[in-house]
Length: 399
Ligand SMILES: Cc1cc2nc3c(=O)[nH]c(=O)nc-3n(C[C@H](O)[C@H](O)[C@H](O)COP(=O)(O)OP(=O)(O)OC[C@H]3O[C@@H](n4cnc5c(N)ncnc54)[C@H](O)[C@@H]3O)c2cc1C
Image (cartoon, rainbow, N blue to C red; front, side, top):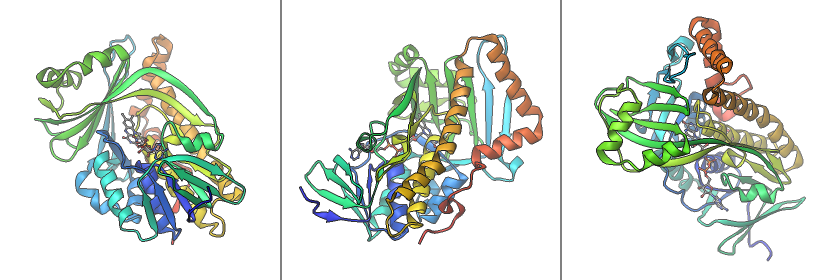
């Protein structure tokens, strides 16, 4: 079937990465189509780094997020393993590198609602509330066919369709992946003691148990456990669950009351072998996934969105040309690969039962605790990568 509609760019997938890419491309002046059903319910939260907040501010999304977000002024790491080599407790404060906060934590439902409101108000952004059924990349353009039978022609397709990406398959891009013997359970809770804007990560033998502040006396919890432990935890409800979460958080937040809903995410490390092929560029979880340690995943997805929109804006005649695709792959790969390796190593040092590896982790944390310049360099790299920031993240509009 010949395409019935045409546009400059089409984004497939309406999660936070796809919505941001669609808004960024439309804000750069491209006629854009977003092919996406409403995003499924998600009880996760995202700790948005300052650069992500800057991009959302530039895209006029942050004003609707601000009241729902809590600052993370300090990060505390506690070794809660029962091993011989235990690392000292470490506290990282944002003021030490001249920031008020490392990040702002927001529930994904509020972030997505703010993005959807902004997307609906953009006249050059058309929302097609259907799934993509097929994507065909040709030398002069790309065609996205929807489940409802529409065919949209574009110069550029952005695949933001998550872990089982149809766009990735259509582009012929393979992934390198490895599963970890861990599951992340997510809860949102209220508590009787204030969090004082501190996020605490208790390192256990199976992974971190992390509390992350939300506005008021609420926090999100990400509990990384073995599959058997995940089954046990998921069988708990009501007061039993509240007591167990309080025990695992060492009562630092006082009495805990879990809100309805628990997400379960098997942990994997997955990186696309290329981030773009033909006229299809992959962003967010379509391009990379790794364990939720260090709040990097969606921050990388938002950086992908900012970068593809910026490169497209530099090639207005053909935003899906081979130059755009090559530059996108070249600019995003080092950032994603280096963070994937760092998170993978950190996770493995937690899982390892080898004494020397536990020792190295302990020494590493000890050095971070005691060597100021090293600690500040690591903190800066965590929030602002050495690699240059895209314009949207520097507060510069693309139009
Ligand atoms: C427990 C946990 C905690 C996390 N915490 C953080 C954090 O603090 N900070 C951080 O930066 N990151 C965090 N992350 C990572 C972050 O949640 C993900 O990176 C992010 O949700 C991925 O967003 P996305 O838009 O790329 O993909 P998704 O949210 O998966 O969106 C993909 C969308 O595409 C749609 N779709 C799929 N196929 C099609 C199709 N054929 N046609 C149309 N649409 C389609 C899906 O329905 C979905 O809506 C965490 C992850 C986990 C598991």
